[in-house]
Amino acid sequence: MRALSRLIPLGLVVLVFFALASPKVQSAAPVRLAYLQNDLHHLALWVALDKGFFRDEGVEVTIAGVFRAGSEVAGALGAGQLDMAYLGEAPATIAAARGSAHIRVVAQANTEGSALVALPTGAVAGIGDLPGKTVAVPGLSSVQEVLLLKALASRGIPAASVNVVVLGAPEMIPALRAGQIDAFVAWEPYPSRAVLSGAGRIVSDSAAIWPNHPCCVLAADKAFLDARPAEAAAVARAHARATAFIREHPDEAAAVAVKYTGASPAEAAAAIKNVRYDAAINVEGEREYLRLLTQLGFIQTKDPDKFLDDFLDTAARAPGAR
Image (cartoon, rainbow, N blue to C red; front, side):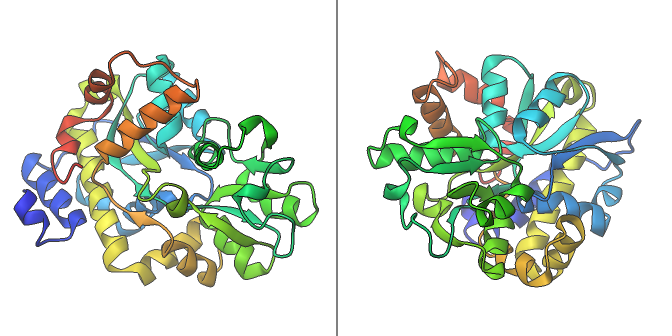
């Protein structure tokens, strides 16, 4: 598979693996899925819905929730309200490490695709200007908060010197314009929207803070995986197919994004270019999350290798895992 992956796009490698590994199935009941509000990182889900990829795989899905933060999604998974969901890798890791949700990652959704945004002519010209400033993140323990803390730590800036507040991503641009915050860290399409509307400028994209960092994942409740493995695999196959579609047909994927995010065509097209869509789980990236989240005091993991084996689905990890 490694030799093949150098010749064929990774999304196709993943898709071929799932197609060979599992037959198509018929759902006994709809698979309950959820995602984050207007988060372009979850575009593969919307493409799979729009293009009928779930139907092609013989699995019926229903959207059981649209949430504002990954911690809310993890909470719903832990409460048994969802079977599978798209959410940030940081909140998923924290929930699994703390035991508040028994979940397993079955696929990557994306890497990179977030940014630190400030006013075009404001006082924040770089990360070094953040001490004493108010910076909004979409949720505590979110990927975006972790990126902010990593950026501060890399420059020796104490986290306590920055006033970090939680704000829904749709509220960030109005708050920036009103002077209620000095900057925000958000997922696409909000950074692109801020730039195109003249409301903000990108101080640092997440690729500069942590190159190729894992961001969002497709995760499943372990009880659901044990009880209905064929349907979980069918959802993963549809996800891999949709991920490949985004990479091969970005213009059509942008049109789908407009439907689900309310972004303008220009915003969607610009935002997609800043996100790397990839279905293969980034194992080494998750290992770095474990290190960071432990260092930040969010979690404790005595045996990182065992955690990785429990948290990352081995079947999904086999093709193209890094």
